Image 1: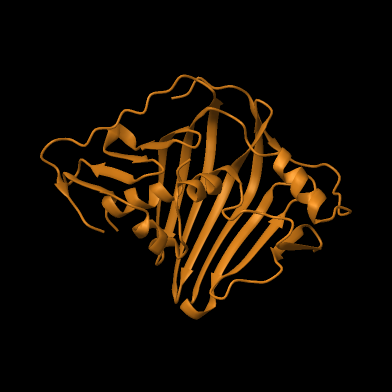
Image 2 (image 1 turned 120 degrees about the vertical axis):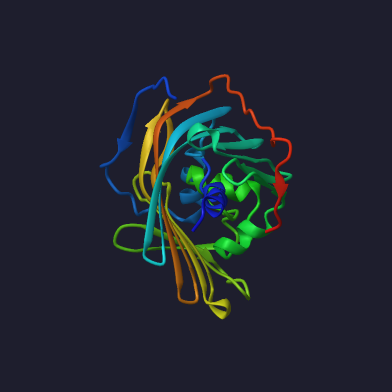
Length: 255
């Protein structure tokens, strides 16, 4: 798999450092006594609130028995822009609500377009908000108390639509201590597609609860892609730049 395709995969997991203290969140007493309304209220309280974020992001990628790992720089301006830069700026990417763009200096190519290719790659429709939510431990679909039922397993709350969509099956698992998402899953049985996003651990940064380790599993027929993410050295609310300019003479590619 060439570096160009890896660049596209980086975009899916967007989310150096004068570092401020962060700590992995663990322990605490589980509370399984909340109804759906109370549970979603507690979850809403944990929504990250910041203007800018930067982090070093370790990515381990596995497909067809082949594994690769990278460490990249990631910057975000919430609700406006996601920016990614690999080592020596060999690959850079910029995502806004309007478009997805990246370039690759190794083969002098660039891409600029919409979210269609990313959506096809993970098997579910994506847009800017969904990509951002995925990285922040937020639900990629709106959680509305009027449309979701809640039940309990041994270690999590389960939220699922009162009426599943015709082509999609959606499930959310919420932590009974943190009230953050432990896992979100979207299945398309007729298409033999399944997307699962597991939040293995969270960290506290400046009183914000943010993902520390995420595992993304995308299955289509007999093909499985696994992406492990680890966010390190997160800082919030600093003045950040998002330098990005496609070099002249690069060839546009169509995906």
